[in-house]
Length: 136
Ligand code: ZN
Image (tube, rainbow, N blue to C red):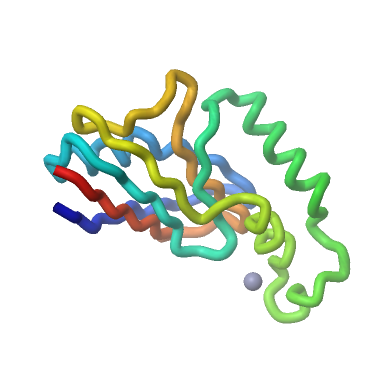
């Protein structure tokens, strides 16, 4: 069985790391798939999906690393039309998607793993994340 679903996220700040693990597990629960895979895919070019540890200090470290690598303004060409070049460039170092095994109707994550939506150009409303649940 293959099921399509989605999550819609509103972000509050320019850069924000949002733990979406429990929302995804609720969607898997609703799908009745107990063994399979889920693909989590953001539909936006200035956002990302990652798996990492939910620890506040690490969140600041990730933000600082990305801003050190890619400053907010640097005479970017894309800023001439959209003023968010740094957000697109930060997404280059991340990924728009993750695929996670499903076991016993939940994501089979490691003890310290959570799934996050990373907002790189907030605040935004209605950020859409597609979920494709495959299994039985
Ligand atoms: Zn842009």
